[in-house]
Every structure is written in C-alpha cells, then in structure tokens.
Length: 87
Image 1 (cartoon, rainbow, N blue to C red):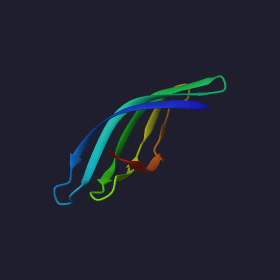
Image 2: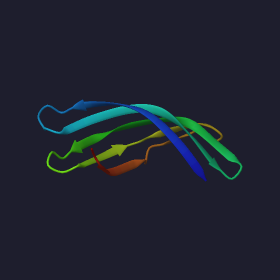
Image 3: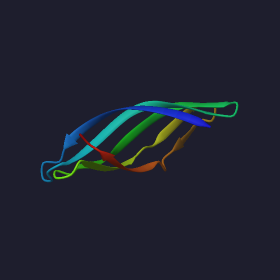
Image 4: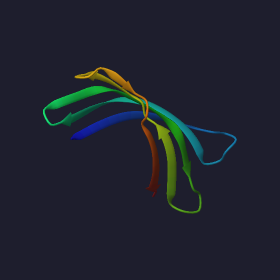
C-alpha cells in the first residue's frame, strides 16, 4: 500500500541543553492498501538535536495514530529516529 501523513509541529528549546529542542505536533493521514482506505488523526512528540560543528540534525520521536475510517482503532507503536543534512 501507500500512505501520506501531514503534521504541524511546534519546536521549543530546552534551555539547559544548547541545540536541543523538544517538539509536539498534530495532523492527519490517509493510507491505501489494495481496495481499502484508512483515514485518521496523528500526533507526534520528540527530541531534536542540531550539531553546531557539522551540518547534521538528529531526532527521535513517538507518533501515535487514531484510525477513524475503515477500521477504528488506536496505534501507539510508531517510533522514529531521523538523521538529516542541514544547511
């Protein structure tokens, strides 16, 4: 199948740790597998660190989802780790 998720995120610095931010967000998703569609709400919460000396950002997040169309249910096992090149 294929899916698309869009989230709006709010990032906030952690004053006691330079370059470290926490973030939260909310949005929605749509996924399609064979002839079945899934539509629901998603949230996100995590930590984000930007290295000062190299163009790298890393983050870890938790992304729970609430499926509303087709099979109503809650999925809490979405965890992600990211590494990004920064400008």
